Image 1: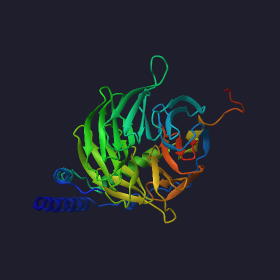
Image 2: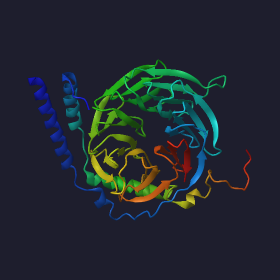
Image 3: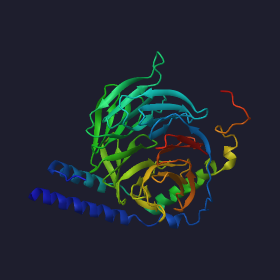
Length: 67
Length: 340
């Protein structure tokens, strides 16, 4: 990692001020929303529901494949 | 130098204030909220196809938006567009420079891009009039290797580089529209948000940064990793970021609360993470490691729920198709595998 020069340091301070101003939401809300979003999506997730992969396009149906 | 010292102190002060601001909104943890969620049980995916044809290490792959085609880049000097269903090679594009480190498929399916130690991002038109695939544009300005690139559209692409910057390019004119500077180490990976308004970068300064593409600003910086971040991705709904590092862990960062939620690690895993991709729902995280395996993590519980073992060398890249139906892994063993 390089050391910063003066102009870079000034930009870094400006950037940090901007980042500090970010409107943070309470994690009780954001994490609850995220868990809810995931749980609602799980039934549609092919890797978690074998029934969704019944017509798996990557699996040969018959014994022979026409090239 | 007095001014430098003052600025350094101001920077440290601001970082402390950010840490405080994060603590203020931390009134719940992921383990607490997910305590009532049912476990997923063992996840077993099988290799359905092996894509053979590259003659050297594969460094990158990217699914097309149509979910059946994908592009891969190898240091045999070729970009190959594959029909993953038939394993046929739709295009085999010879590259000027064989030291390729990244490739990308445009959402439209019309273009692919690649780059590496040549410090350039080369754009190829797959749908040229005479059927030949040709270089459409060579985007040159980075002073370091090209580690990653992702299309916003057929006219804009974002690149990350070993010169510590990321750049938004106008493909038509071949010029830099915006330079995103701020990382203090090589930028290794980038990902674009589902709404195309922001992107994230992971770097060798151990941090991940979220950038506003149009405002050209760094909105948030995430620390916590103890080594280079090699891989980065957005959580499917765009509200969280997942990172993979040489410190052998992956981390989940909440964008709205601006903090780390959980670390995916196991004492038996001691090698670096090279690549990662979430499943469609975000409940699973598939991560490729230097030890030739892909570990599948339950993102809510933090536990390993599966392993994809099948490559004979490092897994260098991984991707889940946009419909969540298949996972593709690429390896230094020169093969790509499709799993589901």
